[in-house]
Image (cartoon, rainbow, N blue to C red; front, top):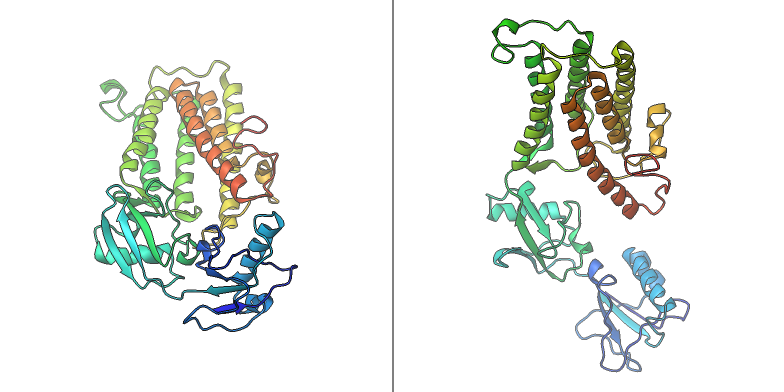
Length: 403
């Protein structure tokens, strides 16, 4: 801890009267755990039992880089008139070890655990691991720690010393329930539709009647539809294994039942009608099928290109977020107009599949998917705008110029 002698007006001076300590907003002190005390004029008495060393603010900034940030924040406060230039001495201390971290139940406020002497540079992930030692039933991915009982969950990479807490930090715990990895979820979601559709395509017994068992449709569009549907889900499975990098490792186990009901149910519904012995081809015949097939192939290539671009944007094992921009690949140029072109291409794939088969269940699946993807796209778009001040203003969430 250092005592800073008189600051020149060009730097900063803090207001304080005799016997009155300075109170700064939490954003200025609590976030960095700075304990700030003004020594009132005219007495230059140093705080009792605090070893103080004369040092200019510039010198202090060299010793501790965070002080540069503190100086900028305080200087800004003076500029706006919220602080006056009256005081001359400031004492700062930086705690190297916290008294502890207190974890309370977010619902009952019951004290669940007290972690003694936690290092200030400890991350939330490390605190979760410490909490698991006393409560093994709540493994780290099942925990949600937050500063407020109804607040947002803290990120695993958040550092304790940068959070607005005191030397004894109070965190609130919520149980997220049993968790399952995203890879397992995606593999389960996508494997089901692939095999369910093929059951109807090959007309296995007990679906269309005994006389149609293992028969084949005479319509070319039925075979093309099976190829397109299978290709789509095989692509998704391969992307899950070799392309996607997940920012969150797990999701609640209960969600897999909802997701599988959606994917598996719609796959069975559309497959039943497309592969039905009484199925009739599209109204405009081969021309309609060829046009839809061309759009489907383009959208699938575009979707894959966007996924590769997003993968290259985030190094393996990292949660770094960057603004996605178009690459030399023409399919990525849609980034100029929308924030989530992978959803745009996905929507285009299912609309073209509905056009190719002229099947109502496919159209309904496309509509439900569009609604959900729009919600996701808007959320990501808002996140981009909030995180990046220089985010391209022309972009829309999912539909260029419209939505």
